[in-house]
Length: 462
Ligand SMILES: *Cc1c(COP(=O)(O)O)cnc(C)c1O
Image (cartoon, rainbow, N blue to C red):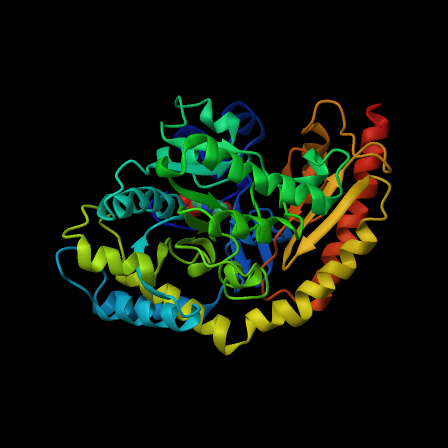
């Protein structure tokens, strides 16, 4: 290819891709055999593949395309910025207009104790930054022994060394001999999978008490922070029981341990509020942001820092020896600024809160009646369906993951991107999705479940 073009046949792209491209989160044996899916265009909630099929992007890319695909306002903002200043760094006491404008806009959108932002290029780097910041913070506070970070099994905090270690995905830990020392994992608040005979509220308190037990066992003087996603995304849209976050708050109020919210998914409107921290009424010391910050138009992440932590960094610290070449990149900052402008000016967050999320919840109530579905749950524009062989029980299919994979492939054939986490089917559509598009999505899911059931019967799995 001497120039970038969509105008080649699918197998041409697939052959070159197989020859030269190692993919993230892909089984290369299967990928090389089947050929990569080639996406050539995006508009609103819809994608087009290289065979001309229209597919609904039920995952908003990777949970990040809040304003939908193809927004020319963002493209124009980036192009204008790049004509002015395509790159300069923010190291060594330097700044530039787009990163100043973005920082002010973020501070206006965030609730009051949050006024300072540290920029990176991804959620993983945001969490790497968090790891260094919390340890640095305790050094500055004269408590250098407070270094351990508590996180949860089945959490997702990114794929760098720190991100993978902070995360609780055992399959990821197994590759690269992780986690690194100084990270301690506790149980997740996943009632459907792990709640046993307890009611959801009993289980929520029980899971939160695991944090108290861990801090007390490790020693409060050794624990730096507890880090968690308000709702686990990649772990399977694990919506904690309503009792969970209040109990976590209670546990932390009695102990001198920082709270870090990984809001890489819950930030920027996904739960019908600008940030998940107001949804759950928590006041974390640090907040990781990425994904929806730019709606995916360019890569950018940030750590949002509570005033009480920022003031220590500003006044006690001297130089913080951390930063990446592209921190606060002007084109990325321009994309984020334009994206946040669309979210605000078009009332997208209110659209989620008042229309789209309640509508999706109603549609999921119906999907919960399907014979394959053991639980249907939503919060904001996140949805999960637990596929089970026997509706009244919470028992799983044998060979967990096989049924989810079948369902995901069926879904794609029906024109809907739905993600499988083991046998839990996930949706997280763009926030600008309309009522009609949500109806189409739910009708398609019902048909996908019917077809999945037929396929399972054909294979003798159900
Ligand atoms: C995606 C994600 C990350 C990692 O972000 P990247 O930009 O992929 O590095 C971290 N935390 C959560 C909760 C995520 O969903």
